[in-house]
Image (cartoon, rainbow, N blue to C red):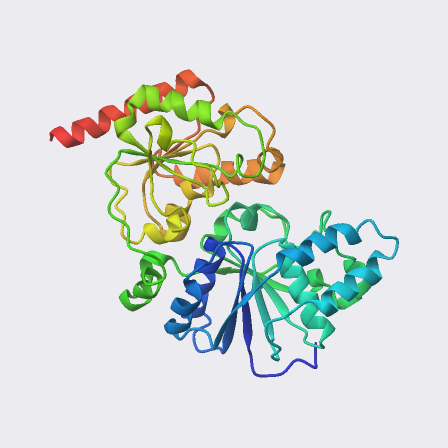
Length: 375
């Protein structure tokens, strides 16, 4: 890449809320002072964020981009005999918000939109290095250089292919990486707890403030229902409710689930589903709290992103139903690695193997909270 300009210029793609938060952290810390633009993709509902992000001064331009229709076209192109030609034309026609001499492209892992952006830039003669920015479990567990079964003819680009230009992965906790790419550089992201007050204020300014959660147990809904995957997540939740009492539990819905399955049944639900948990943690105390999910990364992020000590319970071993990514060996390895890391000094995370074991752990936690309240 000898023809790359010497002056760095970055382009960040906002694809999910956590990916966006991590990108803002990176631009405030390690990449501070590097000219950068940000594109908010319609892969998530970033309504109202454009103006707020522009006011931070971190990015010279903040653009919005309609990305989803081309993805639908990609699926149709896969059925064509001339897929290579079709994909190249799709990249060339992609409506990029602006063209600059970018040197670095920051994306989340294995997103079709990210690859489409890369090849669209390439079609205009703009060659970039690609950096992956933490976006939950997949960034730690999935290979960064395996194209799997995506839509692109990467091999037709030779040395200019997306996977030949990956420059590294930015992670809050590189020690947890199990993706197996020994030759890919790992860069530590600044833990949010260690940001300066001004930097924390930047993050807090992007989303409405949240009040301290009073309930003892926070249950994080998974993406299963919204993605059309059949599991017994709801049944497991109701077993927990029956054990601890509905007054002691609150549910944080998953942003991709459009239906509230809980309020009409008398369960408490956090408001504003689009406020990232990772932002809420800036003002939340986890003392006396137990975080529970089937397999949500939100049960791990207080440790990985903030370095906090807390209690959590992962119910992956209790679920019924087929969730393809939870059965992936890399994911299983990641959960085991997180469990060992969290429990290296004392047991902070439980992974019950039976309903009976889950009840014993719930009883133990509730009794401990009551003892603290009575002291």
